[in-house]
Image (cartoon, rainbow, N blue to C red):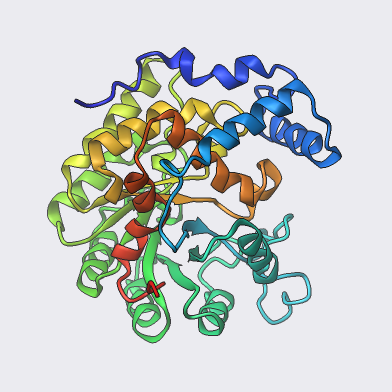
Length: 353
């Protein structure tokens, strides 16, 4: 029987209600408070509650037992020292540290084995930085390039070149890069989506302004090109429901499960939660996504480096374990979510010993 996401929503916020000091309605503020409490080692009742949740979440029955933990969604960009070689796109200069060395340190601390690097808007269609990292760490990273929807169709050749000549095995469709007034279902969009299917690379959709604005385009593309795999970034950017409109968006997300080629990234939890770490108001969402899509079509992602200031990279991984425990997911489900799903999508990468 499928889990009803609107049942017992109050239970999903138990931790928030029991920790009024450590959590506020602003995710960044609440996360920074959590990290401050943790760093100075104060054994307040609030922090003890969070520690208890983490301890419960580390139960072997819900912790992933796979020997590979793979992050399905993160970004990197040039450090200030690298910017001369790998320039930022004008107006997209980053304000956060996001170089690969910083990423590798965070991955080591969190015991994350590999990742799918999504081309950042900071370098737009210049993939040279990410390409250099893919070549340097071929067994650790896979690339997701950024689709160029130029009206002359040049982006189709760019996509093919990045896939065939570098280690790019996915492509991201950002609908806000399409020419004004045009949709992802225009001639160029359909040609790129079809080409992705031919090349065997999944298409990730970034619906930052809301899934409801793009659901019709996604359904049309999935219907016309059933051989192209789809990744819904950040669960379609569907925030925890507060009103009827948000509930409708959740329903639209679940209805996409009827397309067997659609997968869901349970990623960037801070973007879709209405609370701070550990984002337990997302428990009903994870339950229903797994119920509708199956754990083998769900994958965890951090959204590094943005997540570092929100709760921390290691904590982003821990949050999923806490949420999974509350959702009563099995160890097998967690194996899929924390690595097996992505490994299945990209065979030959992150090979088990």
